[in-house]
Length: 219
Image (cartoon, rainbow, N blue to C red; front, side):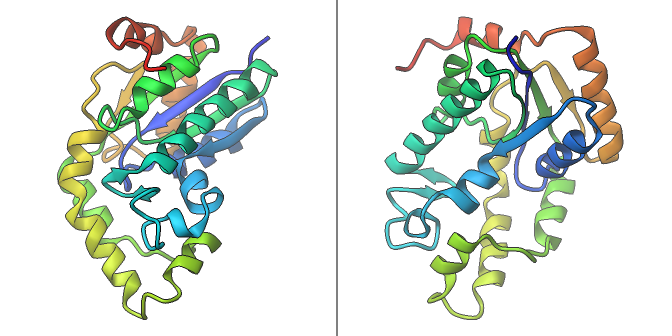
């Protein structure tokens, strides 16, 4: 039997990573955690991150190069393969339509069960969270890329993310089909987890099947 995938979409500051950790901690069945944070913060070599010398080929917050897109395709395939092996997965993600991240994901996970959850705080709350967020733990690849950038790079990063909020809000929430949508600005993480658990108890997610009728296979 295929493992259940819970895929949580949302911008930086929406609470998706915290939700994934809390959900996995609460779940009776074992869930592995994967997603954008792990991919970009740990698995992608430093030179392809936003501070690396090959950032145009890799990951920048508002621009995904060919190396980043190939890594995302691999991530989608790995999550699907884990499900086929019977492993439950909870995944944090940014399901953009442009770049075509969502289109690739829905087709690579065509034959596995996915519950598609959207965390969407109000824009005002999101802007406040991003502006006030403290970046305390930085993954090693990011640290390597930031080493030569100077002592003010943390504040510069926070400012960059704050300025990008309007772009992120528009692109992260361009899709309008989900199995569950929650206003994470008015809910605790435990409340969010309870709503996800209740939706899972109702039966399989159908959002990905609906999305495949809208978006043709991209590969």
